[in-house]
Length: 112
Length: 113
Image (cartoon, rainbow over all chains, first blue to last red):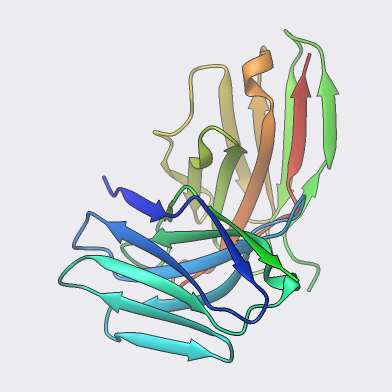
């Protein structure tokens, strides 16, 4: 089955700096890669996703890049703010209606 | 849209007792997923259903765990007998089978003492 690895496990950045979280996957059939943000004590919430037919997607301060050849994808947060502090999970899926395989999470702390 | 509704939000039970967790997916969604989250193991898929039919239950830890989806608007996850190592947050999520991405419920925090 699919194996998703995520790095780093913890990340601290100064407010205003950028943060990058990287994930790799093993199954070349995976074609959908969502990112979830989980604040303390709350549910994971989808913040951005990308499908295998595109290499990059951006939504305001958040962007995701995908390299299908290398089987890795990354989350980029620019101009970080304290409210960006949370645990971020990447995931991979082979398509609609199928399960997500999650990475182990990255705890991001933005220092004011 | 009320989102995915889980109950109870918190459950504390004694070892050996039966525990039932409940989930109501978003109306119209036909895929439902049960996840368990712990610090050690992260988010683990336990089982998922498409159109009320279990598709993959390979993540169910052992026979003590069972899940049902009797109709499109309700699912249960049962643990019998419960053990302290079952303590975790259990999330339910739902989606449209033909769509990408899914929505999580607020979770049930289970503590087995």
